[in-house]
Image 1: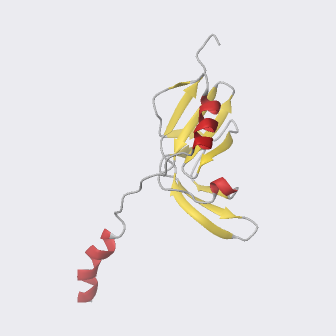
Image 2: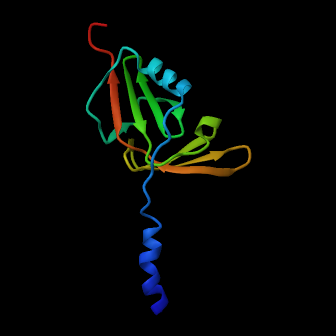
Image 3: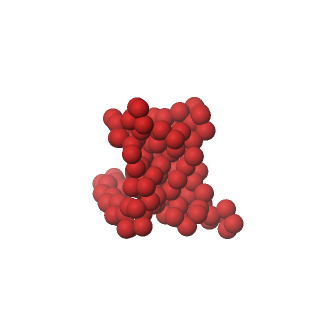
Length: 134
């Protein structure tokens, strides 16, 4: 029992590492710029509605775009890296209710093999809107 007490700080220290996302490649930067061209960023929000149906675009293993309409796209920078997204793996979000929210746990899986390839959490959602009159 005493061994567990002195090992607890060591176990907790292993969980407190910092995560630094990989910078976007040139190709990913071009795709992101193209998807957000003509749109203006707004104040970040913690949650977005699942409805109306949003289209997901994977920019990298840690940057996603949720397209709500031609005029509204949300950028999400994942907390952690969901390895496999750029290879076409499926994202599985564990959320409750009708919204996707910051901190919702996400895993990626290769559906052909059934192997889980990554895990992360959703970050804040930054809305990008087409200015009115355009």
